[in-house]
Amino acid sequence: MYGLLNKALESLVRTKHGDAAWDNVCKLAKLHIGTFVSMEQYPDDLTYRLIQASSEVLSIPTADLLSALGQRWIEHTAREGYGELISMFGSTLQEFLENLDNMHARIGMNFPKLRPPSFVLVEQGPGLFDLEYHSEREGLAPMVVGQLKGLSKLYNQPITIEHTGTRAELGHDLFRLTLLDAPLE
Image (cartoon, rainbow, N blue to C red; front, side):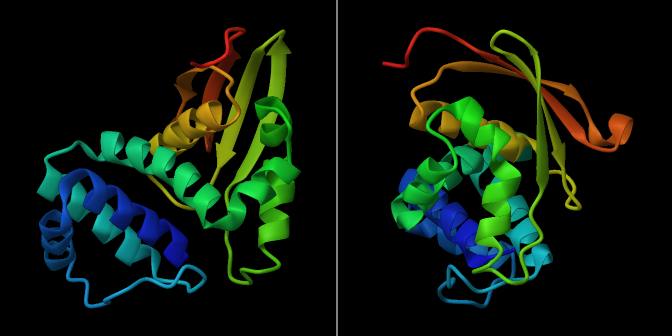
């Protein structure tokens, strides 16, 4: 995975729990890198070790940590200059979700080793959608929930999210999204 994700995790841990917590995470994960480079690729195993170590050090269930990381990922990437890219692919949350694969293809021009997930948005009725999440990486569905929550805030579009099907059952994760009318405060 690229350094952007590891930097977002580091930011989450340092901001919410302090430098000492991040130092403990690095020790537990056997991390010997001082600083992550956003556009450098790191082994997936390293990111998974950092996630597991963060969960243990912070005494937070992995799913909760991944959800928080997903939200931080949206905030972090928007601050790192990708906010304009996000808005290029949708002026509404629905439009953005419909264009996720196109955005990943565009990002792939700058990240040649990118192995992004794929998303399929299927409208089930007014304001009701199923979002398929296909990924070669296991265990990251809670991060998608967090990303959806972050996008909800970014687009000022309240939503409910229900994880209705798992990779083990369907070969991909499935989320039921309900877009609500009231704007976020």
